[in-house]
Image 1 (cartoon, rainbow, N blue to C red):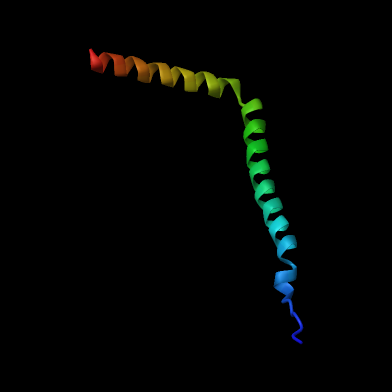
Image 2: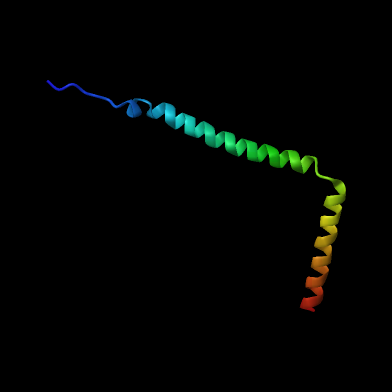
Length: 66
């Protein structure tokens, strides 16, 4: 009669799996929340300057095409 032996890592497999899932979810939540935070607290002069740069680039592109 053989006894079944389980390795400790095999027994911890579900715990390790959910710890990994938790770590990945934590990483992405920090990334997403920081992106939302910085977009809500953006300096309005920076946003205006960026829009002006975009319009200048578009005007240059239109001039080059014509």
